[in-house]
Image (cartoon, rainbow, N blue to C red; front, top):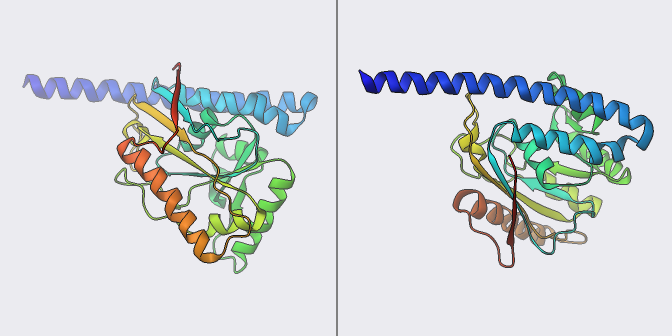
Length: 262
């Protein structure tokens, strides 16, 4: 009887906490739109995105009361425009990327996501690239959009698994993002998260504070690579992200940074 009561109490606390997180996150994202819109008038849309949009998005993740640590490889260049490849875990993956990256970037996502309140508006304002189902020329359309975003000074964030993980594991990467990176002459930069699955996962709206680590790797060049060489890059990138996400293993020469205060 006592055990059931304790379990029910813990669940009730988690429900209240999760409701508070959702309210706080949506309020925070509304602030992103407001602050971004106002500051764009004075400093330009991309400068406003990097200076104000990214930090507020990162703050939304901290509202979960999770402890967040960012680890960067010494060879990572924070100002170089790149194709960031991230494991896909939950609805706050982009917020985790904002914790780790200091310059403006956009994402490639399903077109329906642009209809999500607040989030969709932010993604449109950020230059997000929609993936429209059923388009015969879908790849060429996305590749052209990616080249346009790079010309605007944006990096691109992709989730090559295409779907959020259901078991916390990193699943096979699709090659489309890597082909686009090669076509645009962009380096691939692994961006791996660990602890996001424990905080929230697909199939539930509940949250739980977690210890979240974010690893930003060294750039992997793609320009001029053959198809076989590009396949090797895909395998290498996937292994780096899988090792860190699932086992906490860092590549050589990567050193932890100071934890980001929650």
